[in-house]
Image (cartoon, rainbow, N blue to C red; front, side, top):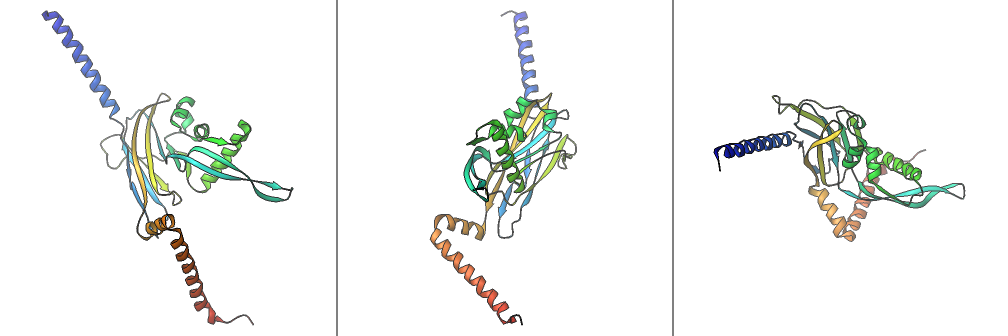
Length: 262
């Protein structure tokens, strides 16, 4: 190999190495960490807070999404029977739907992302509607109607939430371009593992992602009672009846001597 050929190979190798290092640095820029990522449910539990923080490129918008795994949910469809009585007239099945869906963006999703990117990453309620399977429905209008009702139900339980803004600087990284935001965690969210995903968005596309996790777990007597209800329903039922009788007996003692009305 001549000296000129060697020099050419060396130059190409250095260029490739520099390019690779620059790519790694770009991919390593975005980070995500959920504070209070292990929530415990006891008798005094009434919800919590989860903050998400990290560092990002200064030239991107951010989307933070917290979801539970997709699952199956049934809702009872109500209608008038004989033109007078409201009763359950059917069951709507919702497939591939998360029990919890929380979204916070630096701007409105449709302002920073293309429709195809929103659908690809399931960002925003319109994208979620296309992701969820609903049956039985007779038309797209029918499907849209029932997803709207499903969304209202979830929002009433504080399990579905979407907003823009609310980001601040990361107090842990004052010397870097950091971000910080906070979710109110609903007590209605059941035990399980929840995925936190942060998307960096530029030129209407997701250019980078980072993930973290939140675990919700029952502890102490709450966990023991839940296990009993699942694994020993008969004993749980007996204890429930005894507890109800004991509570009624206690109320009778407190108010029994108060006398009746005259």
